[in-house]
Length: 568
Image 1 (cartoon, rainbow, N blue to C red):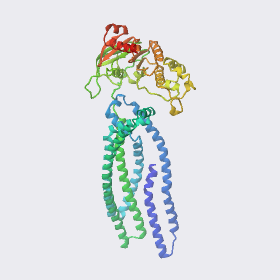
Image 2 (image 1 turned 180 degrees about the vertical axis):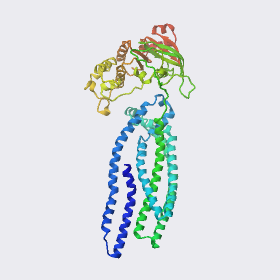
Image 3 (image 1 turned 90 degrees about the vertical axis):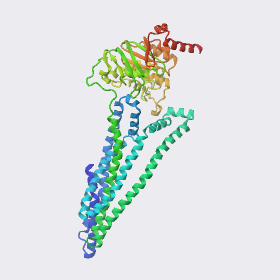
Image 4 (image 1 turned 60 degrees about the horizontal axis):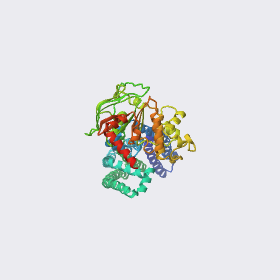
């Protein structure tokens, strides 16, 4: 491609030279009555005139071949980096701003910057070839054309930077815009938008954001058009003066008409090459500012530092997890979410975690998953500091289901087997996991059973919310983890299924520990150990009967819920 583009940069000069020869030969033939060399020059001129089209076809073919690979590899690479970056990083507003700037146009700026490298080769070759030819003819013509083209370049670079800065500064508003769009693009959100009749309000909000942004952009474009027009007038004056110098030499008899045609073609090509070269450099400047964000994203430093020489746990059953005087607060915050927390989660236990909203339950789970490290204290896994363990190894032992679980529009068996993607699909384990989660009941009612495609967008069926939750539980059970974390796992499940699910979870192998977070005390009460959090502190722990005898916070919350059910 580089060779093709380099030759393309020289072809206009060859074309102008042959046209000049053709004109001189015609002029000479009219005077002398001899056209011996005319037809050869004419054929050569016609051939050279067709080369740009032929080379353009070859360039298009080569570029398409390159882009097929580039697009695939770039897309996969960027997705890989998104998956690699710490979960904690995604909770930082500044990082969300960076993502908004980085991906507002997708990977297109990368492609444009890549493609412009070849355009730069063509323009550079054309420019330097023109410089050589123009200087040999007239140094002053060359100097005038170059000097008068520079203001346009400065203007383009100046306004490219300003345009990027508008996007960079307004990233929070752009994130808000993306969030508002989601109410119209996501099917479930759109249903609620229609039923709440909130569409007009949301659209008005979107319009305000667009208006604010477009107002800034319009003011910038208004200023840009004045300055670029002025720069173009300067370039035009320089080009016109160069033509004047060339024509004057012909008028004075110092050059032939063919030379005039050749130099006019050369000067036009030089002018175009200069403008094109400066425009490409200006465009690269703007794209490089965007690509710099992509580079910043790719080079984002991890929040969680992996140990250089990790200690291997080599677990074959549930571990003992010890919180040793653990405190935590989020970065750039003075508020303690957890404070001086000390407790032991014994192997094989079924642990219940309760507390009001904001008590620190979610943060407790994030620390176990090592999404964050403690601000103070440490977490020990079989006596080993969790910070000394490879994250990949530790995650391989965990099975986690958050309230905001992912729904996989795969075949039913694949939606369950994704729980352990590093091993081949096991039909018996899939069935067992579906039985535990009570998903087998409705799967067997489906036409294609475990082969049933999920998701109406893919020609499948749309499970109910409760069915989706059961599939998510099955996915977590299929993982066969040594430590399971279930955050409100049955919030959308019917009472009968809920009872059966928890009966199954209670009978899990002693090789598996389970941490259950729920506001339903009828399920929590069956746990071996119940931990009560309040304002980030562990205020009570023990079995249900022990905590009821204690008549503390747990007993108060349990009795309140029981009283509410009795009133019903």
